[in-house]
Length: 355
Image (tube, rainbow, N blue to C red; front, side):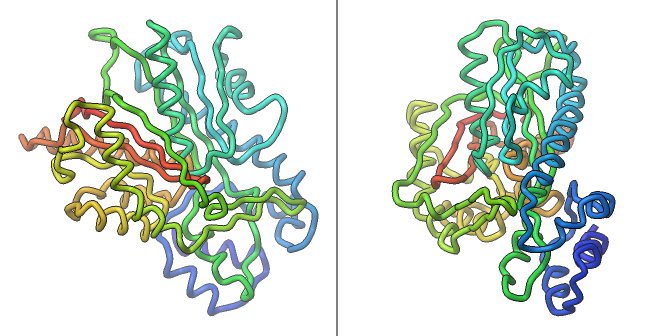
């Protein structure tokens, strides 16, 4: 919760600037983080700026993302109601680790998947990684009849953790905005009647990068960890291009789809930050309720990078079930969107099967 995280962050880094602390307190409510007092006791150098700590950070991060991905995957497969042996393919997404062999193998070993499971890892795709993972898993499922593809995402901010500084007040935005966690989903075609229940049907999947914006979301791996910079122009860049991109996704998914009214669709948008959601809402002239799931995920989890779209979709399923229980109609078609380094847009036209 807010007070615990803020107090812990300042106490553990031995920062006693009341103005900075007050600023951070205003920025968020709840976050989940791997960083703890125990880690800082074992690695006190992480609370001191300027020290070469990338090895220590990766040691912590590599272990944490695997453990979180295992827990999320097991929870997902339990909800599916099928045995682990049904998983034929694994798509693993993380921008929080760097090692050989990669996290996809460590996750497969941790879950006890078959040695024949076919693995793909997407690295350093940032906030668009979750939707990119859905796109790749969708293609695998469609081209391998009978397959069941496990998508797992896992992220931690350990690699970019820095103590607060009055010289870098903008860092507080990052501390408040980003969170840690993991997510998972299983994709396939032709659900088994009575054994599997589909939540969404994925149709067209589109990726587009914007030339000339590669510095807008910038991350550099240094001896001190990852130095991460978000350009202040990012919300404007997204606003300028989001409508044209959405029309392309809609056009490729359904004949005449680009003519569908935006307010007649559901919107699962990666909550990169409050400003990004507001710009998307304004540009597309969406009703205030359309981004409820995105704003709820941002409030409860923050921007957890590739994981966050899983949280948004889960909240959408909950909302759809509540409306159905009340006898209310929900939107059948909608878009799943995310924006990441590049600047890269990822979008999927989807059908809500819970509605």
